[in-house]
Image (cartoon, rainbow, N blue to C red; front, side, top):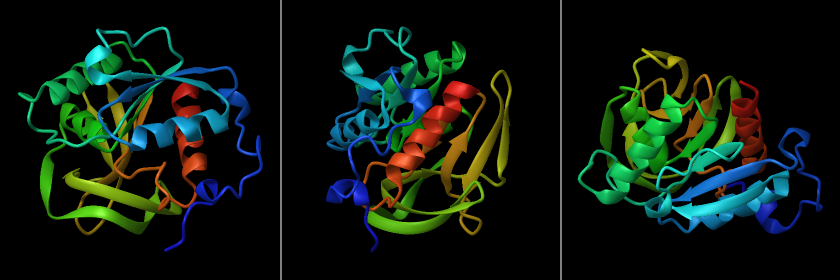
Length: 214
């Protein structure tokens, strides 16, 4: 598999800076995943400052930041009796209600998808460190997957009352959702920060630049 230059130390310092992200404050919500530290490392290479808060320390503290990254983690996104899933769902609901810019990753992407009305499935075989080439909104990308659950959509767009039009990047054969783009948010089922995602920093930077511009 091709792997990310970022984690090989092959990227010169400052080479990834995104002018629109310079000086921005990003909140990263930690949902108990080691990948969170990797997200922070990539974010800081792009230019913003990142503050990490565990999901159970949020207490509604989602404003006061330029954007929020809702992080990945283990768990069943349909189990709202799980305090972590309930906390992520509450945070996503607040972000949608207040129209705050945010990016949701993996588990948080699934929680967001469910809240937007997309059904969730348990995959017959979990993806654990699988690299796939996907069509991400018209661009071919090699990305890394680590997921037991997935959202599914029958179409490449999804209208959500009160939210608006959501563009859906999906597997045309299975309907499994790879990514979403909404009026002030984006989400990835894959892990942009994974060594298996070849151009992860660019995908992360493009997503954040997009949600801040919309």
